[in-house]
Length: 461
Image 1 (tube, rainbow, N blue to C red):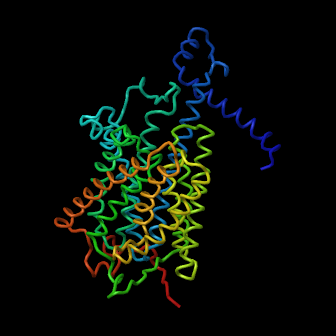
Image 2 (cartoon, rainbow, N blue to C red):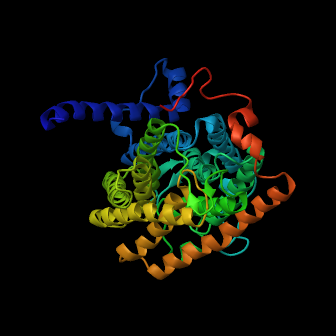
Image 3 (cartoon, helix red, strand yellow):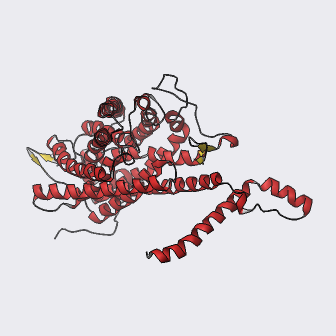
């Protein structure tokens, strides 16, 4: 946009926004206004000058946090379309069902127990475990969440809904790794337990001011707390579930192609868009300098991740691979998530580029280990989540590599066994894998009795 035009348009727009903010603040004084009206017969409207700078900052901060929440919410559509596109058409309904149900599971479990488990206030076991009660809600006088200087950042409700959007992501990561052969009811039960109990508990160690936070461990927006937590669960599930039929035949690895690269590409772009809220919202205010800086590091890391994945996969496969390219973007995003606010711009490029290389190599290694991951969730979220967390200790002088390594190890030592136990118990009781006939038929028909593309016939020419 032309700068002169921007000034002509932007200043009135800003003034209008401030005026609207002033109107909103006036609502808080509704009782006083009504009292004046009853005495004088007129309505008294507070002058714009009476609105404090702190009140305006509170409104702007809270508004940005809500916008960031919307962006994180749309990431779930990105996960759904990416996973559906990278899998076969006969499992599309099942994939969309899982990714829709996960949002409800994340929101409800976080409201019932997760929020107060992740942010307990006081720890009954110092730094390790705390719980401030079931349900959510505060008195009106405690509604504002204030920063260190006492200025309001956002409301209690905004705080909850923003954090709740993160909660379902851990289960969404697992959904991609176990796609095309997991029993729906077993997966949903796992999601309720893991998202409701494990994710918020281990999250309290850092974001809830637990023992890792006291040690100086740093994870800005969740390379470990969100992505690796989901990645460790994915690894346990894939090991217990086994590969899809026909994936590994003898000593050969048979590629099972996704049915819709357009859907997968749309999903990757939706996730890239949503990451502006995922990382930008994690600033926890509308600080213009820091939010814009995080936008830049996030976006450049994604671009570098794409470039790294394109370069290496093209060299190895002799052809450009779109699926690797899309995962390269996500690898860069996951990699920068831990340190988006504390590493330099050029360091973010390096972190993203290395993540793009790692995702290609790790996809191939997991295949050689016969760990069947249809969408590359293990490589993107576990491997690159670990890399991004360790990168903070490498590229930020203010943080220790050793401390970052301790944090990574701690989450792996708890999340992998916890997920393994949950899945194992489900395996020996309800079962976790559909039978061979249902898998060949497709989960859309066997689990749901419907088709994603009813009436359409796709032929290979």
